[in-house]
Figure 1: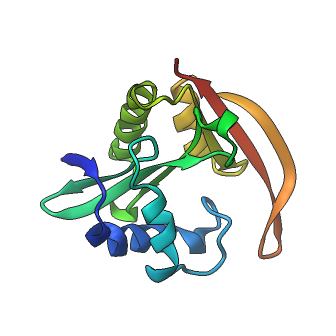
Figure 2: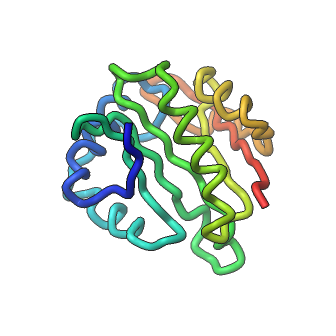
Length: 163
């Protein structure tokens, strides 16, 4: 298993993993698949040292990815990021998410990040348990803020100070 900075050549695999989770209505608020073209600006925003985008690959195949996303575009918030973590459906529950999250927490202070956040739907128990196992605390609960088809869903914001 190799973890490395993503390249533009990885973007189709990143998008495919992301799109595969949309139908489950468990992880993202996107309701329709995204395109590689629509994610180019997002990808380019991660081409700076303090907002990396990593892929975990094995034998040249991207199995998971993690992004350090800007929390809010004001200078005072530069030390806070939201982590995006997505694992290919055939490789879930194999420790990839845990490994990437541990690596992100350890790496964050080296790039000037003091606070990491996870935005997780309240019904996404596996992700809530994963983040809480790393001592993330529930900092906010936004009830019924997302409408996923006919279902209204809560958003839980988990946070952790890392430096």
